[in-house]
Length: 186
Image (cartoon, rainbow, N blue to C red; front, side):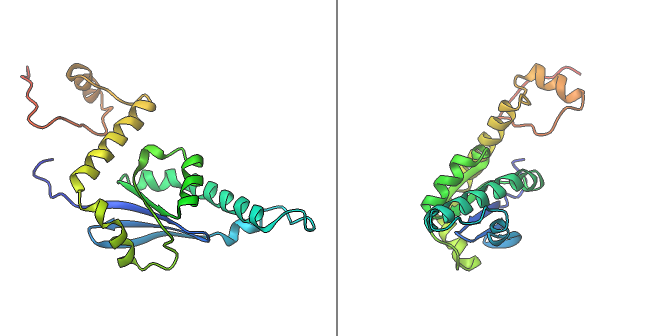
């Protein structure tokens, strides 16, 4: 609501060549909620056959499999933390991830770069330019949320249909434009 304190809560997915970390952010604080290493992906890859498979191909295959692994776990996290999601990764990795992911509608913003050895305060600093426009982040997150609901055929619009659905306890989130006015009959 308008009177509710506007907390700057968000999710941050950091992908490096070897690690995935997901943080829950609140203002200028980050709390690590998921940390995975690419090493567990290595076991499942086919063994290198002689010298026919070059190291670059193996590295890319491993990275793509790692990104698929991240993608498969993302829905559970997004259900638990329905917050604006930022993704930080090197440009090439980000490109692969954007091709793989079915969650582009959940992503509010991106930051390119290698954040493998970045501290939490350095991560926040890299996100700062985007976090400074919080009202834009919230608006984009709500528009993403509406697009997802529409794609899943879970969106109801119009005062009459919304009223009917809410009385049948099919409600989850109500978004109303500022200064909306509608006379009611009780």
